[in-house]
Image (cartoon, rainbow, N blue to C red; front, side, top):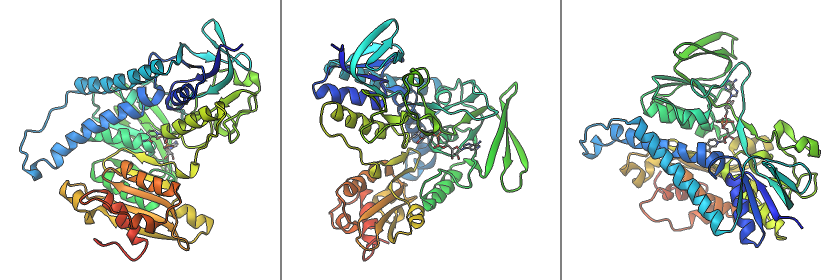
Amino acid sequence: MADFDTIIIGAGPGGYVAAIRAAQLGLKVACVEGRETLGGTCLNVGCIPSKALLHATHMLHETHENFEKMGLMAAAPKVDWAKMQAYKADVVGQNTKGIEFLFKKNKITWLKGWATIPAPGQVKVGDEVHGAKNIVVATGSEASSLPGVTVDEETVVTSTGALTLGRIPKTMVVIGAGVIGLEMGSVYARLGTEVTVVEYLDAITPGMDAEVAKAFQRILQKQGLKFVLGAAVQSVARGKKGATVTWKLKKDDSEAKLDAEIVLVATGRKPFTVGLGLEALGVEMGPRGTVKTNDHFQTNVKGLYAIGDAIAGPMLAHKAEDEGMAVAEILAGRHGHVNYGVIPGVIYTTPEVANVGQTEEQLKGEGRAYKVGKFPFMGNARAKAVFQAEGFVKIIADAATDRILGAHIIGPAAGDLIHEVCVAMEFGASAQDLALTCHAHPTWSEAVREAALACGDGAIHA
Ligand code: NAI
């Protein structure tokens, strides 16, 4: 008899959620995690610590930018970097301990160590081999390297090193204008670092609605971030006091260099699946090192499943969580499903940027007829009252049926506002359905309703 119904490898948002749901559904569950604490990249060195630093530095920015305007004449606060780091560590600790509590509550066995899969139905941790009816690979991802660049996590860092720098640097080059580059770049820019972002493409945040990306870049520039676009980084050379980043401009092949105390490499992540023994098991792999799975998260090896960053799709904690729940349902003999058409994306800068569904660019590419309703936060009373009137809400609906196809928001609390559109899309709602829903006044959410109204006969306050 197997020791466990299910062994999940990895306790990040995909793995720990799968473990909890599987246990709730009556399965005997173990979860293997080699880190000292549960929660994976997201809780330990990703989403959560970065949000602590983003919050603290946002507060700092508010004191500089808006306090005086509101009649708050306090002296500008001084930054105690060690204390800010301690606050961040405390936030991480509370969250990782919370998962440990949930494991105990749900009677999930935490197998401490790094796992390998010596044979189907077996997981080896340390010297012990544990049997399981089913195994779920939820091992997440790691920063992908860039040719010509050696990361030392001190001077040339990934997001992990960027969260724990020994001091606030005077200068920083960020390679890659994606989510990590812009969130961490914002943190340091607000702390007074001169931040230059070097991006290969001609626009920031690839794949994002082009209008939002443009507005976002303008706002970040106003906040002091500098951008070099259309630039392919060639090398990063370590010097005595920092590093020199060399890039080539795509338009004319000209070369340029910039010295910085710290270089953050944020050029994407890749699945973290090496060392598990997947090759020896004959597990079929997909592009870029992903584990190939079918619609039920099953690999080609019986009883072996995979979810989260290790498989295809956006590398997002909440996508992994949804897959974790779905795979647990499937393993418990139920139906598990993830609607990949309605997975929001959020960048936690100020203002926040959020999106769900399709962009105008995608719809144009598909030759699909659509209409756009837009509403600026300048027309939203609440946003103006709190100096957060930058940005807009954009809702895209099918031209014929009015069904919502996507939403793109840049503005206050965009990462929360997006969810009313997500729910609407899950229910197949039209823009008019949103527009006819009463929204409390004065709230930022009214801007979403106004954008929905703009898909029809027009917004009221624009
Ligand atoms: P990303 O894929 O978002 O952006 C990487 C950027 O680097 C791209 O714009 C790319 O064009 C650029 N790039 C690649 N090679 C380059 C070169 N040689 N020179 C200059 N630029 C180059 O990757 P990122 O920001 O590292 O994030 C990794 C993953 O983590 C993403 O999947 C992201 O969604 C996820 N993540 C999500 C967060 C959130 O949801 N708030 C927060 C942090 C990470």
